[in-house]
Image (cartoon, rainbow, N blue to C red):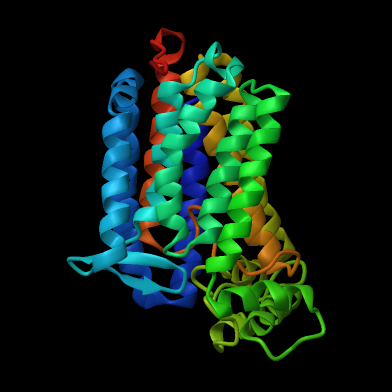
Length: 351
């Protein structure tokens, strides 16, 4: 992996996120800077560890994830659709660790020969079912859907056959059906209000309307950092997390929003193109990260533009939050480690 491109993209996203956060909620800036310092450390240290060692630790990581997801159901508070630990003044959302851990576990198990056998894949899917079920009953349906979509698309790109693809599609449909049954009323209202575009009474439609007003008021060049009327006058809800893209578009205009999207596209393109030169375990890590980055950023931007229902999914590397940022930087460090080790990676498989 060209070592300059990833840190450059990360640095630009960091500057955009911190600048916007300083404009919107300066009281959160120091904490987010601390998250970035820890995150950069995790990223560089992870990249320096040979990828083979990370593959060997994948099962222990999965067990640790499952333990955290079980404990958080009983001892942690629920915030919106997810559960959080509070440790030393910081909040930890275990479900944010699911995708990097599950992609690492997938990389340790899936080899080109095993992709041909549905029975082996079903064993793999059965193992993944437990952490996904635990996240689903938090209930955090959005994270489960993104996780399933990311892993499925990644394995498809890596060479799954058509029969297994159809089986994965059925699993996704069943999961969404079950997830709908356990959703809270206000969560269902987010989806139904999105479908009823004439409804103005729900908070979801209010949020979406304010986001569109923010984007429209930015025009081509924006109102200027710290000068956005929607975000500064507190009309725009969750402006530091879910709707930070709208705040960026209001302050920096179409030019700033377009630059942000170009940075994402550059990082996604690089992860997917770099995967071509890697053996399969490295491909799984790099492709899954690229697919997740494309999915989550697209969903967040689509939500801000009113094209998708409000899901609570944040903008990667830009929105405020420690759990998402640290887990994403660890994942990116894994991809860097896989790229550095390249063709010398030994391949593990399901026994």
